[in-house]
Length: 78
Image 1 (cartoon, rainbow, N blue to C red):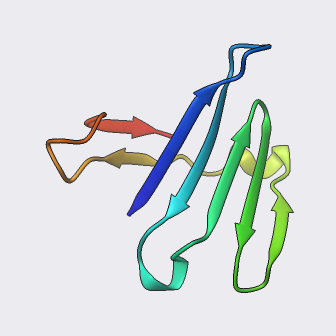
Image 2: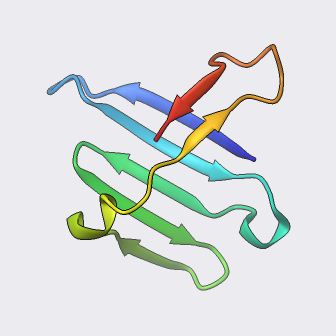
């Protein structure tokens, strides 16, 4: 499960998104930050922040579907 926080950047109108991993247990509290074309990954167990290179960004696509009908979005692609 993931929790996604997003807001638009006042200067460029692009989204800044913070994705918090809520489950599975091995991924709890890991974070992804997307700001414009920059993408960062944070792992609290190693306290390491890693910038994800542009070449790797095009390798994966997440198609997320809400489990609850109360969710703001039924589905979202990241």
